[in-house]
Image 1 (tube, rainbow, N blue to C red):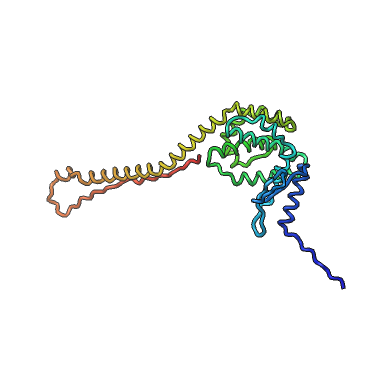
Image 2 (tube, one colour):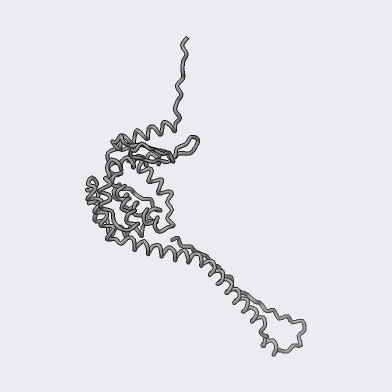
Length: 288
């Protein structure tokens, strides 16, 4: 008799991790890369790409993991850190926008070469758009810039809601970037020229000052929203008090005309009608 040994099958998560690791090394064309998941540590001395933790029996966003892994692999292959650092602009916000522009550059190169990468990156960004938090000025500025540059470099078409949210900021980016979009597209494969141009355009925008103004505007709008309900209550109470005062005055005034008439008709009833106008109010709240 031959004893058959069944090979233990790897779990779907383990298979996915293996496939992702293999894909990253293939895209980056670098065997000196190690992929870790979650808080997993490494002491190999290799280039590390950290991906989200993947556990059994948990809901996993495979699309986002693939998109993030593809992007990191493209960064290793197409982005030179020395060139990137040499053109970095001043200012925290400008640096964030500069980083986004470089990310879009190498993602576009990879997307043009591999349809699978293009789909993963587009799907990942679509998911990101659906979950954006635009309440903070910084988030809105950064995300508006990413959307503006992606829309132009990747030829994305935004939904009406996205256009509405970013409309005012995209007009500002248009002033500085619109005439340079074709130049940016033509220099995608020349990192130095691309980084240098983006850095100069951002520096000319005075984006830090614009952000400060937007932040002050948002704070004032939020303050107005908080004070508005209290002001409305005070105005409502004031109107009610005025109406009650008028009613009291009317009721207290003597009917001079009836006092001058003969009073020999008994049982005559004098009816005083008091009325107050009903006030219909509607409250409108503006989104900042």
